[in-house]
Image 1 (cartoon, rainbow, N blue to C red):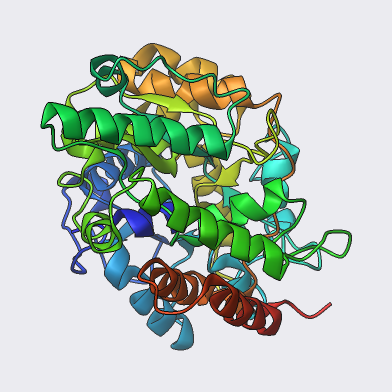
Image 2: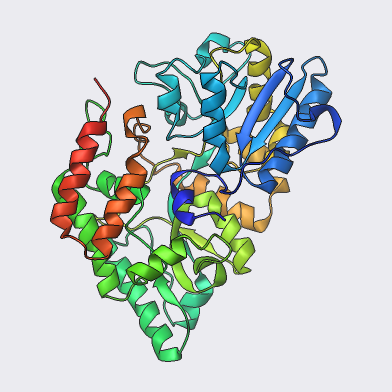
Length: 432
């Protein structure tokens, strides 16, 4: 069952590792012939990807494709084993948390060496830059855009007699007050509803708080590293939400975060607000049956939320591939072919090719259009994406969650925990 905490750090579906058989030209195969392509995801992604691969095989019958699929849990263990054994797939789905780790170990091909077959020139430049290593080597082609946002259930706000907030100006204090109002209404009405389901234990949230403070978790040379004061203010705000009954208590938060997308409060119409990367709203819409909407994140300074496009995930090519040209041709098709885009839609994030956004619009549902419209509306506002997680910082998300939970439960003062978080970050910074 998927943890929504994991959803904020990596778009994938948790569960036992499994390889699914397929019929037709793209049957799973352990053979080394052709292009092996490996990805993680849920059943919907698996089905969509195989359909797009079948379309590729129709257009490129001379390129054999061998699909390999896993859910998130087993994906990285298998990929690490394959890579260590010199048997990595030719094409692999790569995550922001791991791309630097694989790239700096020379495990990924420089995509600019096959740019005649993989044309990324029309992709949003800032988004494309997130696929580069510190030395400028392009090792990942972003599949789509994900934007950390606030999901809102308009029906709950209406029942509570609360107007939809102005997300272009709201602040964290205003957000806390709104969540508290929802919780107070629910308590008086005897409803099992809370303002916000959980907050404060995810590294993506801390990174957002840092950006709004003019700082970064993993700064570039011209950027400022997150300070202890900023970490303390984040932890104290999370505690304030609990004290105001704006969010569930610590135990309930942990339980809800582990409940899974379909069983959690937001998906079952029992919280008004929820933080997620914006295309994940589709899953919550389907589970809740409610007309959920997306809002900008609140800001520390009104009107300056410092929203960013995050690469939802990447396509990368093994540096040891025997088929670089065929691999590039396959990725180019999956990223840029209009008919493939109509099959894949925005399940992996909103495509970073603006012309394809127009191509797929006629085949998107109303729920899917909520995600597409939100991404389009934000493009004039988003700031430069942060540096991808360096290989030295792969474990930071888990460590931060552990320490932030300790703060929520009152194990130690936020100041003490902030010192430990900062000390860990300092050891995880990339070499310059």
